[in-house]
Image (cartoon, rainbow, N blue to C red):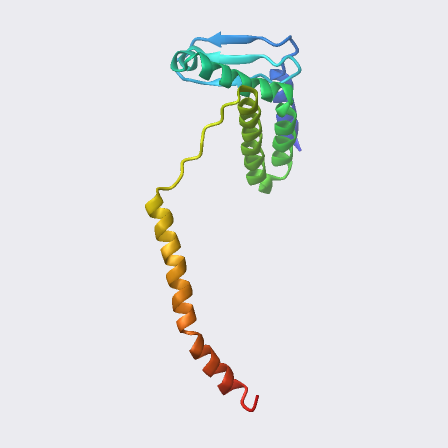
Length: 158
């Protein structure tokens, strides 16, 4: 119970009620975060800012704005509280965090109309898989006569 109360106190401490703003913070590590709360404040490190071009920055900001707009902090608060009260549910909390990140990714991609393409396997790999499937089916067909003999042996007089 005290672990759950600790999670709630920590959340209250970091909640932002100010209006939406984007701030840059000096730092050597690249990161961007949406501060929990209605304010929707977004913090981007200068290291992250320097790594990205203008379009990439816009996508990162859109990702963080999705977190703020959809109040993802509430979902994570519930997950962390449940995780604190029921220690065996940590994997569910991790899964929810992954899903929320994907939700923000999809929102940013929809907003900017650009979604990274999934890499396609080389044609050789696809051809090899089809060849393996066809070979397996052919070998199984050739072995069908053994199955017919087995059925006849097991069910005589049919």
